[in-house]
Amino acid sequence: MEFRKIRVWDLPTRLFHWLLVVLVAAAMISINLKTNESMIWHGRFGHMIFGLIVFRIVWGIVGSTHARFWNFFPTPGRLMACLRGSWQGLGHNPLGALSVFALLGLIGFQAVTGLFSNDDIVFRGPLAAAVSSSTSNDLSTLHRQMENYIYALIALHVAAVLFYAIFKKNDLIGPMITGNKKVADDKAEPARGGGWIALVIVLAITGFAMWFSNGSWIPAPPPPPDLGW
Image (cartoon, rainbow, N blue to C red):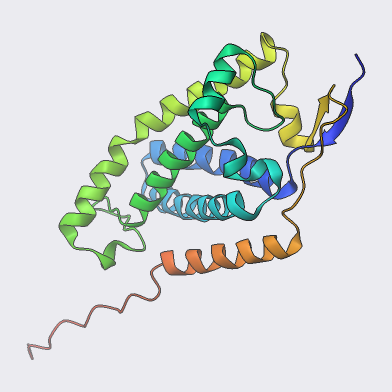
């Protein structure tokens, strides 16, 4: 059987993937160090993760073929075909798509709740002042409770990648590095779309989201009254 290489993953999708890996790892390490400085950095990493998630959501609409959500959304029909072994495609398979959406949803939830969270000591999220203290405390609790679920989902994701590499002889990591995948189907077409105009639009939206989420638009609290003492 003769194989050829075709482009599957565009550069923005690959950069998003590996930057997310690095930043999530950094956020996990910093939260477990439990020092004042590490908590400050944990907030910074979380804010950057928020920006990445915004980027990926918008890129999932206007990006190239296999980066678009509609292209790999795990419909019941696609899931059944995957379970029967009859699914064919170049991007995420339907089961992998479930993992992708779960990770984006849970990590996105963590990033958003982190913006409103506080630890009652050093850290205060950039949008904590936009909500009441009780709401900030509630979101902080949810943020902490979701931590173990993220660990479990990441472990499952890594296990699935290793399973495909060892037992299915399907390398999922290489294409996410180079962007290319070996295929035997001579009719398979490379990914299209997601050009520079789309990238500029996505970066502009991401930049606005990052500015809005840094809380600089929130009015400063009024100074305490001068009691003349």
